[in-house]
Structure formats: C-alpha cells, structure tokens
Amino acid sequence: MRTFDKDYKYLLANLVPRHRLSADRRKQISDAIASGDAAAMRLVSVLALEDLRQSEYFDRSRTQDENGHVILTYIRNQGSYQIRLILPADEWQTLDTTPPVDKRQPPKVSKHTTARHVAAEMPRAPEPVDTSVNILPDIIRSFSINDGRESSLNRLDRVLDAMPSWFRFAWGRLVLLEGRFGERGTNGDRVVTVPESVILENEIYQNCRRSGNTVVVDGARAKKSGISRPPRISPVEGDEVLELAVAPVVSMGEFWGVLEVWVTPEDNGPLLAQRVAIACSVIRQILENSVRLEDLTSIDKLTQVYNRAFYDKQVRIEMERATRSGTKLSLLILDIDDFRTVNNTMGHRKGDEALGAVADLIRENLRKIDIAFRYGGEEFVVLLPGTAEVEAIHTAERLRAVIAEYDRFRNQKGERYEITVSIGAAVFPDHARTEEELFSRADAALYLAKHRGKNRVEFYHPE
Image 1 (spheres, rainbow, N blue to C red):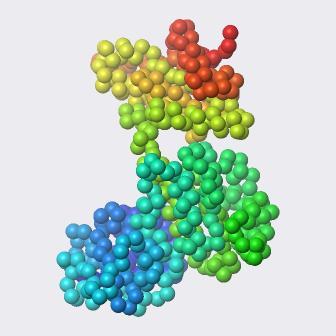
Image 2 (image 1 turned 180 degrees about the horizontal axis):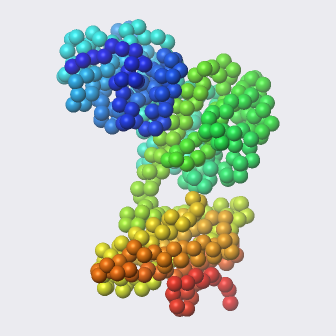
Image 3 (image 1 turned 90 degrees about the vertical axis):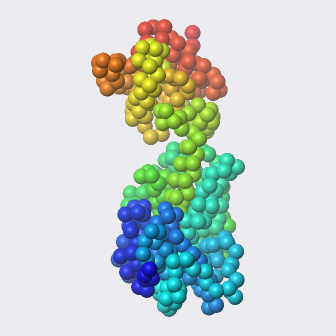
C-alpha cells in the first residue's frame, strides 16, 4: 500500500474522486486550487475526505502524537493507497467528540499499515491552519438528526449560536423564506422566517440573490438598508466597526434565504468568502437533512404527495399565516370520479396507477407555494396560500382540464380510459373561520359537483 506524501494541491487534483462529491464541494475544490491558498486547500481537503468517508469510499483512523498534532489517516476501501494529513491537536479537539487518545500510547494504525507508512506524513511541516477548518460532517450530522423532540429551526438556531467560534464571526443570523421552510419551528434569535417581500424590498438581499455571491458592506450601509446591528454585540463594537457579509442560501436548487455574517475589519481578510461559503454549506446540509428526514414521515408512498397527517398540521400553519398577513387561503378537494369502477373492472394495480397519474398531474400544475395532499382513498386536497376565489377557480379548472385530457391511462385492451375529477372549493376567511369549517364547506361544494354531473368545479356559497 502506498502512502502519499504530496501537497494539498496534488491531493485535490489527483487523489480526490470529484465525481463522488456534491456540486458545491467540487466548486470549493476548484476555487481553492485556483486561489493557490494553502490554508483554503487544506480546509477543502479535510472536508472532501470526510465526505468520502461518509460514503464509505475511505476509512479513517485518528491518532495523536507527542508534538500536539493529530494525524488523520484515510485508507482507500478496497484500494491500494492511503492519505495522511496533520492538524493541530487543539484545533481537531474542537471538531471531534470522541475521548482524546492517551499520548503515552503508540499511534493507532490500520491492519494494512506498515512501519514505513507510519513514518510518512503529509505535509511534513504543518503550516498555520486557518480556524475555518473547524467544521466536519460529523458535527453537521449531529445537528441534523431529527428525533422528533426538536424543530428544524431550533436546531439551526443552535448551529448559528456556535458558528462565530467556528468561523471567527462576531455574529451570524439566518433569514429564511416562509414559503420554502414553512413554520416547522419557533423563530429564534439567530434564525427567522420572513415573507418573500422582505427579501425583494431589501437592496443588499436582492444583490446577493441576483448575483449568487457573497455581498460585503460596511455597518453604515447595512443600517441604511434596514439591517440593524446584532443586539448581542457590545456597543463598543458599533456600526462603524462591524462589516456585514450576506450570502445566498441555496438548497436543492432553490433559493431559501440569506445568511448574515457580521465581522470585524481584521476578520474581513482574503479567506472571509471561503469561511462564509463553508458556513452556507453547513446550513445547506442541515436544511436538506432536516427536510428529507421530516418528509419521510410526511409523504404518501403511493402518490408521493403529502399525506393526511401532514395536512392536519400544515392547514393550521397556513390559516395562521393568512390571518397574520391578511391574505386568503383557498382549499380544493379533488375526488376521482367513478374510481370504484376502475378498481372493480381493471384491478387494484390499475387503480394505483390512476392515483399516481392524478397526483403527478396535480403536482405539475401548481405553484411552488401550493401544497398537495392525498387525504385518503381517491381524494386529494390542495392548499393555495394567498389565493382568493377568482384565482382559485382558475387553478381548479386547470387541474380538472389537464386530468380529463390525460391520454396515457389505458384499460386491459390498450384503449384510452378517461379519468376525471370533481372539485369542491372554499376560501378562508370568506367561507369559514376554522379548519373544520373550511374543509366541510369545500366538501359540501364537492358533493354539489358530483350531484351536477361530475367532472366539474363547484365553489361553496352560502344559501
């Protein structure tokens, strides 16, 4: 087995399989190599190797020598080489939660490692390490586990509380769009959810969103734009001393909000953009893990839209939001016409196929802020935030039409079998004051649509 004793540029360019890494990590590697900055390349090397360890491409052993440095040995699984890196022990201690290794014990090595490998180190003379190497996927994951006892927003608030010490920030705050993350937790000191209008109306936020890059401004300009100095920063470090870096937070291809980072002038060095980028990467992974884990219990397996349990929770959130913002919330109930005939004549497999097709058509013809649910059986519910009756009628008619025009559902003879839906709708607060009333009014409208011939839309109107 070979042990590589090369610089970090060689490691990133030749030894790290970039195709196994995320797009964000690949970009960080390219940027670090292009910059030629040793500290930046070392940081990305550790992060990339830890990513690969999580995917079981590498194994890692950890030892500590007598000189106060930690030796990290990454062994290629089912391969013929290993890579060794050195970090200061006190810096690694901020990353690792396992008990420290007794200095009197010899270094731990893999069963594949020989004495010649133990002697090889990379690099031989460690240079000063930038403190932005204070985060690894192990810590990210510890904050990302959704065990049902703590909301995602509260976990993010804890991360933002720790980030200043990790990345040499005076203060950090995460501003998330309500439409992306919903209200699955309580806003904290460092994590807030805001309407999209807040982002649109702020010049600094908008510059950051349009460019996709970190925007750095002085405290005076930040204050002028409406972004106030963090409340917990000492008055001695006033607006004239602090500078603000605002970075876009993009997750799963969508803009979710911005990360605000306040720094002192001495911390606004050439590596500030790198530190902010790594912080955004941490937040992105937490967002994705939180949402993915929460969705596991919220998605109907057959149709891949949200399930009844998630509807029961989300409808309260959307009604509260509509009340607070003074907007409307429309609710549609869609029921597949004569669905029992499909099951009885063609079997339950074809019935499942019909349900999946209708769910796909619903999802493909809604806005990003609209939410579809499988309520039960052949019945679906759609919530349309910020939508009054006229716009809701257009949406309901569009859904009815695209489902009726669907021509890929076939019977046993290969002939087209028409699927249609009847739709009932009601609007909060025009037609109802509670979630029970809103659903029952839309259900009454659905009954009317069925009674009047099916394949039609009816809105609730009081007698």
